Image (tube, rainbow over all chains, first blue to last red; front, side, top):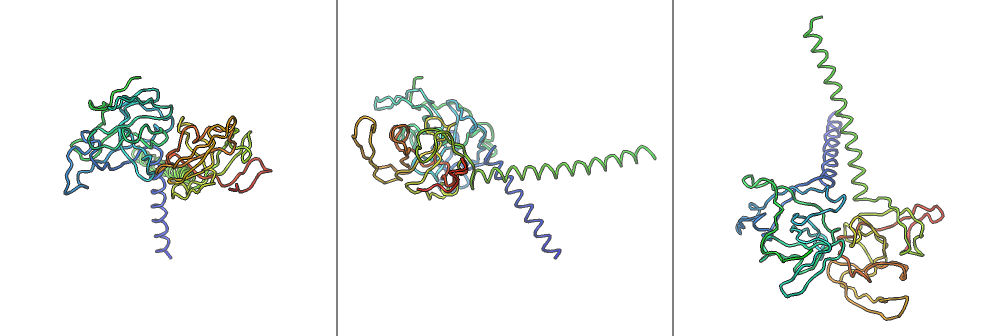
Amino acid sequence: MANGNFIWNVGRKYFAAGVIGLAISDRYASLMAVRGSSMAPTFNPYERKSSRSVSDDYVLVEKLCLGKYEFVRGDVVVFRSPSNYKEKNVKRITALPGDSVHLPSFDTVRIPSGHCWVEGDSSACSLDSRSFGPIPLGLICGRITHVEWPPQRMGKVDSGVSEDRLPFTT
Amino acid sequence: MTTTAKLLQFARQWKSTAKEMLGHTIVLAQFFSLLHLTENYICSPTLVYGPSMLPTLNFTGDVLLVEKMSTLLGKVAPGDVVLVRSPENPRKTITKRVIGLEGDTVTFLVDPARSDRSHSLVVPKGHVWIQGDNLYASHDSRHVGPIPYGLLLGKVFYRVWPPRDFGPLGQ
């Protein structure tokens, strides 16, 4: 009987910890691994083909920005892919509602209200707004503020926009 | 009684108070976390109003129960009333009916008030086509196009207010 009681107590403690942890990661902040090289100079700068899992960067995703959905140009965000809701992508916001983005084909895209333009830092191997257009801000599920792993690159993510992104006017 | 003994007693008392407070905090945190999880993953009440879903939902305001499991598992079918994060203002949510899923062909009237010109298209991958029940006063996919599935927040399944309409919401 005492044994069963002990197991019950341990189980209850683990359950409580799990529930609190999940709620914190939903509401405030969570850790996430970034895969792929589409954000290359910022995350995963050295792509190693043999041991891919070793070179993954772990980043801190802040969720408090979801209360008001206020973003600035240069924020790195996690969002659900518009073509597959189970997939999450990491890209940088380069233009906000009201801006006009000039495409290489001399077209101009005006970003509708409640949308934003996202681009990867390495434009050569990134699937982003240049192929699927502006995305609704409602798809965003967090902002990346810090790199946590590997330790030699630990620190804040700078919000500078890379040079080769598409030009825009406000 | 010496000062050291007094201090020790004080420390012991303080320790037990701190322990008790920690226990209370954990219970409180657990309660709020469970509330948050229920609200986000199981079901939550929502107040909706507006003319776009007449005659299914009232103009003046209904309280609906929104179930979150079926959107998370991808079990949304055409005909379901869903709660959607508005693509034009992420701070707002709207209630509409799903007309078509990815790959479906939808046909809709472009401007039902003035002409019966219709238009049809195939819903792209990962998107859904949503429309209000009141075609004349609804701002929906006919204006903003198909919306990404990721904007769906939940499926409306029960109405709790007003009391005369209490009951499950049909197709």
